[in-house]
Image 1 (cartoon, rainbow, N blue to C red):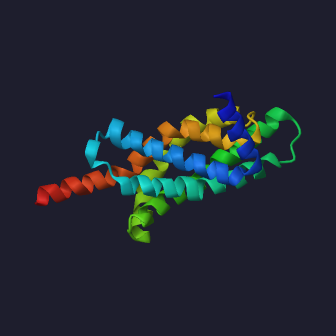
Image 2 (cartoon, rainbow, N blue to C red):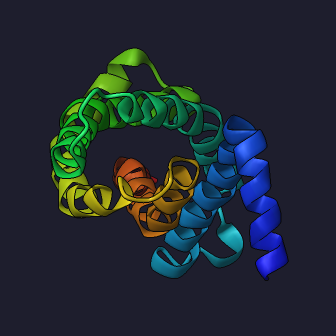
Image 3 (tube, one colour):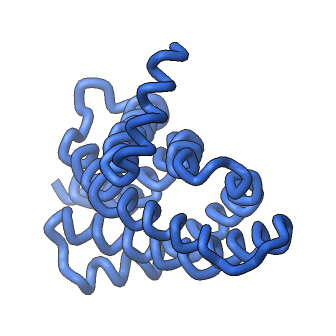
Length: 187
């Protein structure tokens, strides 16, 4: 196990973007599988396209953005550890998190083949409660995460993201369940 962790650590040091994208893709997929199988209990009716969409978001959009963001936060010119930590967490949660959640709901809706108007409606419905839940989890976690070496921060986030991604997947899928129920009633 130590050899695997050492190899992963070396890979993250050499290729932080690619390593972050790969681990994010796997862990976002894991979160969606948890949502679909353990919470929604879909069994053989697993929506693989939904899982693919969240993998594209997590590995292709979220991971590169967070990798650049963490590097940017690391360059804040604050020398004292605690004030720097509070500044980084504040910027992360009150500037970056709303941007990421907005991107998530828009990207997922558009990848479903829906319109920008649908994406705006999804955002209006889900953004505020999701952001509040984000703050409850990630303000304390990010405070601790800012003490983790930079190359491991995305991995730490991704570990916490398994339950978070299950939550996001469920938040994004909510209206679809209502739409399906309405269609079933019409039939």
